[in-house]
Length: 267
Length: 168
Image (cartoon, rainbow over all chains, first blue to last red):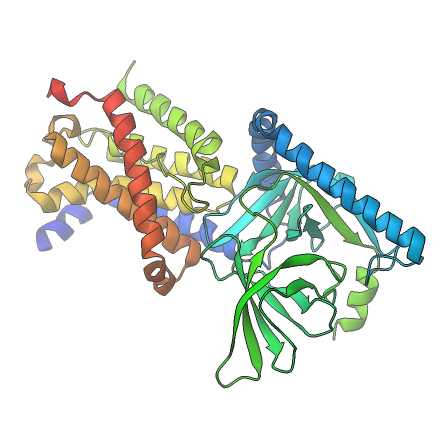
């Protein structure tokens, strides 16, 4: 051991090693700090440009599946339009003019880490700002964290730091969706009150309280639940409708009234 | 081509492969092979260690920028590159003979064990730096082991293409 320490102390490479490790660790810690929102727009722009080139090649192989998902979405929109015409009602929970939708495309998608992110090919020039929601045809994908001119970095649902306000479908009982960090399509809902009438197979939808997503967007089905010992709430296990390992076309949702909502909730 | 240009070229090829292809592989929806460390593992121990560390760092940073991972790959690349020397130091080679170790001349079984050890360590490092939680790393031991096994499969396959054990 003494021999090893003596060897290390005489080597310049040991100091280089420590120096480079420190830089890498600082960068890693900074990447985990979600409070700093706009400092890495240059990095987002560079990663966006490189991934855009890669994606241009890749997307030719996935055209059929993207077409299928767009057809499904068209069908859903037609159904909603029809319902609106016949019932004279809007999509549950959303004011018709409150949310605007921007189409975008995922050009880089992580799903094998604990703090996963995505990159989309739309940014500030398209009116996309931090704290806006991102949807796919099957459900929610994440929340925009930071933007550059033409790209945006999105905190994926597969990120242990992200919590989304959700509710039991057709009720006002709400809790928080989080990813336990294991399987990409298995999530947990915590803090749902014990008096909520839950059963296996029920659908969990967005709660709409954060103002990031409108209320009522389907997220997944309940596969199991348990009462949290010592707390008057349920822990619910759900399987998401969205396959987070294969996302392509998405929509960024901009809540036009969010600033107004936030101004009332800030202390 | 001198050794520096040669290894920079090999590392560049592997970084592009990792960014363009391997990062997009999702076996069973959970496992992504980590092969960018292969060129770092075959870097000559006898040459400038500072150079080895610097290209490991530069390569890792490139992957981190592409993958939005802060400095995880850079830290892993530098860690693996530096630890190689300690691995051989603690195995059986005396300190004064360190400069004479040639990775291409060790027995092939030893070479595979060397790959397994370092691919396993790099997977642990990546998962630990991502989670910053030792408990979580322990709870994900199955994922780490399987990801190591899948990475090893690809690395040995690539190694057999680049390096012919029968030449030993």
